[in-house]
Amino acid sequence: SETRLVATLNRGRAEIFSTVIDADDAVAELALRSIIFPKETLVIYIIRKGTLIIPNGDTVLTPGDEVVAVCTKRNSKLLRKMLTEKKF
View 1 (cartoon, helix red, strand yellow):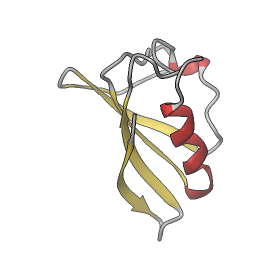
View 2 (cartoon, helix red, strand yellow; view 1 turned 135 degrees about the vertical axis):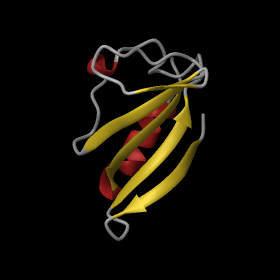
View 3 (cartoon, one colour; view 1 turned 180 degrees about the horizontal axis):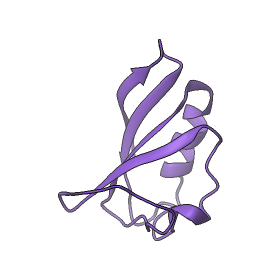
View 4 (spheres, one colour; view 1 turned 90 degrees about the horizontal axis):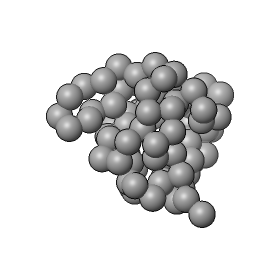
């Protein structure tokens, strides 16, 4: 998966970006609560088959989900890597 920058916040100190979950991504089929996200990170919403989902810890990321997240600039690279890293 690739990530796409949606917006920057607070003079570039934070970023909102989106990525589409692939079946072979390490986070595919995992509940959000089981993923150890970097500090200062929030999954804002998920678009699944055209439907907007406001996620909670029980929300499972499924292939095809567009995940939109916000994080501080210093955690952006790590979060992008986590969401697009492939399964072993």
